[in-house]
Image (cartoon, rainbow, N blue to C red; front, side, top):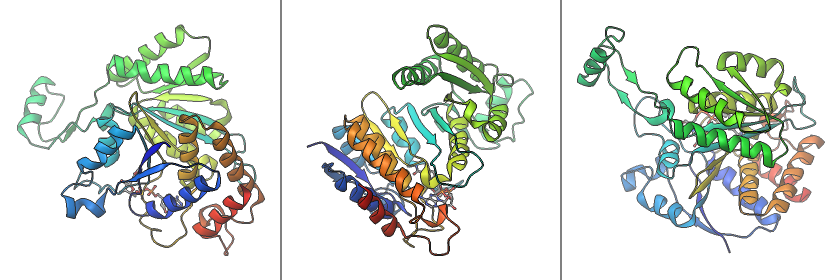
Length: 349
Ligand code: NAI
């Protein structure tokens, strides 16, 4: 039996993990779950939101299903997600967004897969405090372009990092019958960093038989909200990918529906795009679909494509029927709870 690290996370994490495990059981997928608490809840007791035992577990299993964890804004511990991605070199963050028939939204034909580089860019966490000696040194190097009282973040982009994410996007397109890869960048302004990413994207594209185009990130945003069906696979850097994938989640009905996978050579972590949703945590009303669909991506990863397809079609059926929907998907005052919605999914399976 496959051993899988399970991080329930905090906020709505435990609620949506419970729903996801019910669906996995209903589809007949059995695993040996190594449950590893992490996040704000263990910080006080263990001195770290991401204790070594969690990392040891993922190192041993190579596979994790993860609920969201809270990261304080501006202060406190660094993001557990960023740390996991860097520790296990989970360089490819794959985020598919496809319209669900039945939801009343401006577009019904969205089918985009975002490949977000997951280890570099401004998320590398290289920051210097305003007025520090480091910034004074950088200001000297910048020759008058950087005020020494500025706070500074560095944006590392490497040729190897760019090549492997673009290659992963093209491989995915080839293996999944996709027709086009679009590189999204801001190389007109960041000529060195984004310029390098774009040059590598062009080089990889030149060796492939799949259509390729490129768009500046601001233009990509405009086109995504006016003509989303013109996109197929998007490959981009870390920050743009983070933002574009929430935008695409909005196009298909919101964060409650957007699944994700973080893939590296030695490990893979499957998690929803959304966060811990503190505003609705503990109320039993969260939409578990994003984590359930992330678990379906995990099933495909471990060679259980049939079970993944059954889960995906059960989700599509329940949403298309429109009778049992969580509050984020309906104006109906009698929206379903997380449990009622999960009951409907289990019944549909
Ligand atoms: P969020 O994604 O948690 O919530 C944004 C909005 O979407 C909220 O109104 C929330 O109620 C709603 N929402 C999110 N997921 C939902 C679901 N499954 N069902 C129904 N509604 C849902 O983003 P926010 O508020 O910016 O972040 C909260 C915390 O989560 C922060 O500490 C952030 O750092 C963390 N976070 C963690 C992530 C992870 O663990 N992978 C990813 C993104 C954020």
